[in-house]
Length: 220
Image (cartoon, rainbow, N blue to C red):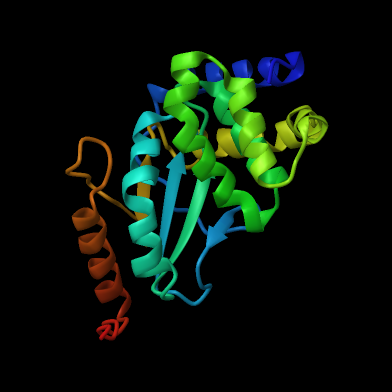
């Protein structure tokens, strides 16, 4: 985590973030590409895009309190396709290293890694043991220290991450995390920056209706 090249790259993008905040407007929701990591059916009538930072306490709150319910209720049942896009706010070094690790772990482990980091965020912040925390998460998906080091020092991966983050800021107009876009429409959260399940239920129902999708069958 203390690799100089990683820190330099992240500091550069963090400075860009600060410069971009003043002039950008709410946006987001561009079409899904091969650069995106997704969960759920490609034929789902509703797509939710979350712009998130792995060091963002509000993103962690959403993950730890609401994401599993969202997944079971909507993603696993084919009603929602979920997309997470990277931002580097709050602690850019941690967020960058976490996203690099998630990408290195493979699509099948991506959300397991992000979940592990979110759940370890508070302890890492309290102890300052970021490297140890990341290694613990890496080991949970079968990676060792050498593999973790190689992953977060990969210059091509760092450059690609920076490009995605720049795009999310400058082209998508995203300036805070978490930001949620449901079928192109940003959720107005009632939960202090974190959408409640009621917010999500309402947004998903509205998106289904606008798309002309039939109501889901009631479960017994």
